[in-house]
Length: 494
Image 1: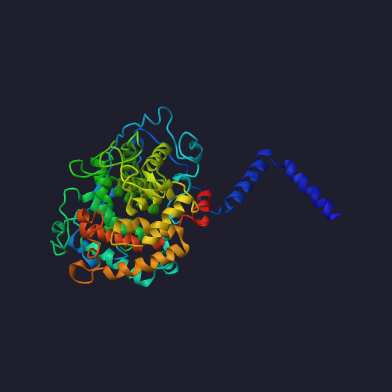
Image 2 (image 1 turned 135 degrees about the vertical axis):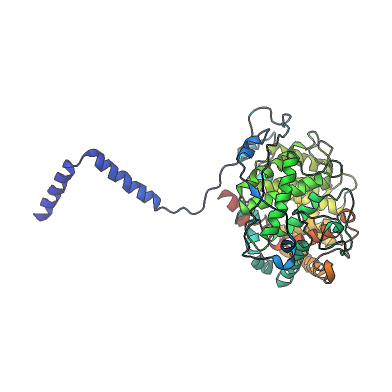
């Protein structure tokens, strides 16, 4: 009886409550329930459309702050994990007009989406589909947040990490007050030419030196927002942003520099953006990469020293790596640019794609083949592709050399392949580099002796050799192996 009376009373009370009050209560309960739902992972925003001008994106740019470095900032003992970020004169990137890619895209802007890849452009298993999740702690750069553990588990260890740390301190001591680096050590106030094998070659410009010096920091997971070297990284990135602003996306000096520099700077900015997710880097990075895409040879699909020139495999390698890094950072990449780059590789390949030449299929070398095969990896070739297997087998048979340019590309290939190939390669590569690192005087922590006759060492000298050697010793975590499902396909789907 009491139960029935209670139910009747409840119905009576509800009958006296206005309908809008009941509706309000239902909606409040629904909102509370939704708020309590915890999602597994944050969603990745869709890629931005490619535009013929980046001025709209530049209007959204927040200020990236930087100042000239003082003598204390440049000293080795100035590395303070608790140091505050520099807050001084702001560097704001102005609107950058990039020439339209009208020969590729006449109508609507394209976005980086797998649906854009059809039989008339790139294959579905291309660079943009096989990179991994965008930036941050996941994707292709996710290993940089756990450098020590990955080094220990994949062939490195305390010895390689100590060598990397010595190298980063050498670069710190040679940073210039404006945040840049120079190949010519006479320009460095703290060195004044004490280091041998500097370079005053007119092709060895300041922007390239700065990018090469920043890449080892970025390779270890350092950015301008976190890490003991964030102050130095911020100053270097700020220098590159100033160049991007002044050159409307072009960062090299056309009177002496080339697209080699453009590619290197593109990689540095894109990696910093991917790891930090700092929105102030979005516009300048996009401007630099847009310039790379605009500079592509529209007929042959390659890049060389200056915009529009028929390509060579060496310059192409750096541009493909820059676009790959940009895509990982969420920068839109024109799929037809990727398709045309694949066409260039087809043109210079020999032995069914196992070997690669310079400007055509003749004169194939191990270094050029290593560049071509790494590009093929990033553009979709599978591990069991016959040409990949044959080409990698040839490189493995030769092993590491005294040419750091070749070693840099070939080491990445072997790490991606994994297994016995990687174990055997690492067993030769690691002790050679550790033994060759300088240990005395101002040169301590750098590399040159034993590698001075390799590709580009005559132009880049000690700074170039030190950058390449350091990035090779960071291979254990710098890029996650792309042929592991959990680091490529799964993360991309997420």
